[in-house]
Amino acid sequence: MPSREQSRPAAPGPPRSAAPFKVGLLGFGTVGSAFATLLEERAGEIERFNGRRPLLSGVLTRTRGNFDQILSEADLLVELIGGIEPAREYLLRAIRAGKDVVSANKQLLSQHGEELFETAREHGVRLRFEAAVAGVVPVVRVLEESLSATPIERIHGIVNGTTNFILTEMAQGSSYAEALADAQRRGYAEGDPSDDVSGRDAAAKMAILARLAFGSPVHLDDVRYEGIEHLHADDLQYARELGLGLKLIGTAERRDGGLSVRVHPAFLYAGHPLASVGGPFNAVTVESEAITEITMSGPGAGGRQTASAVLGDVVSVMTGGARPPAPPLALPLIEDVANAFYLHLDVVDRPGVLATVMQVLGEQGVSIKSVVQRGMGENARLVMVTHPILESSLRVAIERLGGFDFLRSTPRTIRVIEEEFT
Ligand SMILES: NC(=O)c1ccc[n+]([C@@H]2O[C@H](COP(=O)([O-])OP(=O)(O)OC[C@H]3O[C@@H](n4cnc5c(N)ncnc54)[C@H](OP(=O)(O)O)[C@@H]3O)[C@@H](O)[C@H]2O)c1
Image (tube, rainbow, N blue to C red; front, side, top):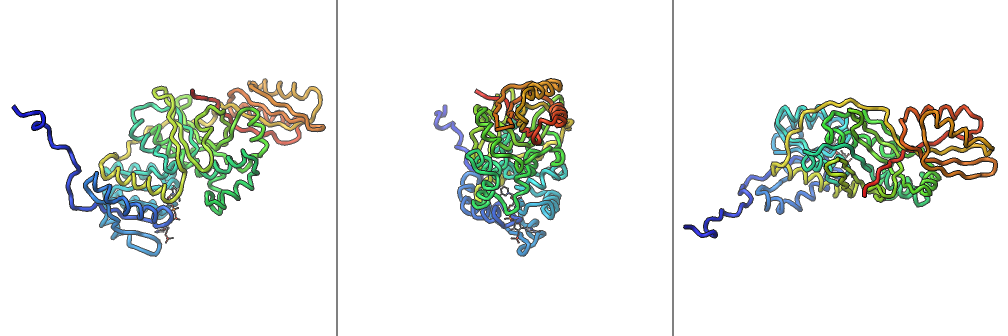
């Protein structure tokens, strides 16, 4: 009889293969050049556990390389050009040629994702895009693989590092303009920061996350978004008195048999897992009855950091860990959702004003959880937090308040996320 030692099969090792795994690179800017460097640095280690050595087989920029030649030579294409065209055309041509593809392009995926997913499915090709959402935080793979059997109810994300940095600075007393200038000095914000501060960049990422988490096609145009440009530093100070911190939050959640995807500034209570995420960091919280909640956080951008997420996708394809995209399952989009609100009113300080405000709010079903009233000479400031109320009902209440002469300025509202996890 063979001994236990003799009967044990040989330890599995990486398959031996001489053929390198050829990677064609489209774009050689901040991320593309960092990716090329990282690929070279890590090639030996990847070969050691995978049996094949990744090799950069061609590079395309506006002035260098030939797309057809790069496509014909590569086993996989990495797209780091950004924007819609020609990135879309190149990716479609690669997929139709049966090549696996990796992209970090949130604009493209949030506007043409279904076309790309459908084409990849038809051709049995893998399409990976970890770096398109939440920078280096590996949320795409967690949703696609680790949580693929978990029915997800809600995702909250801080998915734009620029705005998170600005809000962190404002919470420490900077004005919006000072915090934005600081973000630009440190390289966190572009010269034209409008996509970041308007919430559009975060909306693109939430469209991609919602598609992943709920399987339903979500286009960037389906996401309602608000930015941070209109926020006042004193809102942050009042909110601190109420125990709240301010973040630009993306939400994708099941509501009333449908799906709501939105981005807006929101106050969080200190116990929320996203409340402590400061500076240019990103974080995503996934909620499900089965898992309560999981929060992942990490750097939101940066050439080398983003390149490491891209290389992770390449290795995932090399090791066969990724599948072609699943077919969509359409859910209706829900526009009007209930939220708790922070409400800031500047009013004339005279008897009966607070009672009238409460009556108008009460008529629309708005009930108040906490209120801070402060006299300011002849005026007074009423800052309150409501219990959850449909956005449309609060809008009606605010329009009605606008008809009273005691209002000194346009009421300000900011949503409040109520949940705390312990
Ligand atoms: N930067 C980050 O921290 C970060 C983080 C997450 C995701 N991303 C995503 O990563 C992608 C790349 O971003 P990046 O910051 O590296 O961009 P980038 O620095 O502007 O680089 C873009 C590259 O694409 C090339 N390119 C532009 N148009 C082209 C065309 N028509 N044909 C061929 N090549 C073209 C450029 O070539 P030339 O050199 O000839 O101009 C350049 O090499 C984007 O989708 C971005 O959203 C970036």
